[in-house]
Each structure stands twice: as C-alpha cells, then as structure tokens.
Length: 150
Image (cartoon, rainbow, N blue to C red; front, side):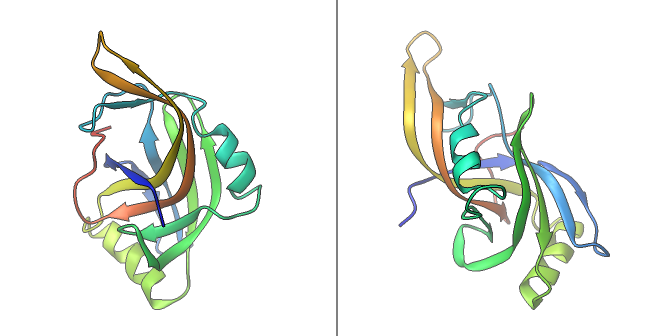
C-alpha cells in the first residue's frame, strides 16, 4: 500500500513521440503547496540512491497513481536547484504510447508522486510542514490537479 501522494502542476519539459523520452519535474523545492507542505532539497537523495534508476530501480512511472498503469521507466531521477528532475522512457506497449500522446495533447498536464514521510518539521511561523526526507514509491503523470503549482 502506498502512503501519501504529492502533486505538481505542469512540470513537463519535453516529450518526444519518436524517441519516447519524457523529461520534467515531479516536485519543486521551497514552495508551500496546497497541502501546507514545503519540500526541501535533499529530501529525495536517499530514496533516489537506494531505489532510483541507479539503485534498485523500484521507483515506478505511473498514470494517476494507478499501480496497474505503468507508462514507462525512469532513466534519470535527480535533485537539482529547482526540484526533483526526471527523464523517463515510455513503454512500447499501448498504454506507454497512448501516454505520450496524452502528454503531447495536454490531457496529462501535471505530476504527482507517492511517498512516505521519513522526516519532517512543522514551522509555526509560516504554518508549513517542511518535508526533509521522503521515501518515494512512484511518480505519476496526472489528468487532474497537482498540489504544487510549480
């Protein structure tokens, strides 16, 4: 069973129907989202190294958090100064190819990720929960709204 989900509006950098490569962001750092959370840089570093593409490869790329709808495979997951960047290769199966078309047609326009909080700290002065370490299970393209507008 997955824990929580965190969504992000927009976040697609590029999609190529020909190569099947999609790039974008699953999260932006230092932004208070509609859930009252602020994810800080470093929150993903352990989960990426353990379960990302260079680790065990267990973080999945899904549609709408549906674990029966894998759309592709993450090839790159990394933190940069903006947020959690990804590069993924869509699958050759029907859903993977349809997903590319959904992104190009702007049907899928936002992102989210399924996670468990490992470490957090509430800051009363800004009324926000700082997420300092997360275990990520999946990243999803969404057909609906994300919590983080950036």
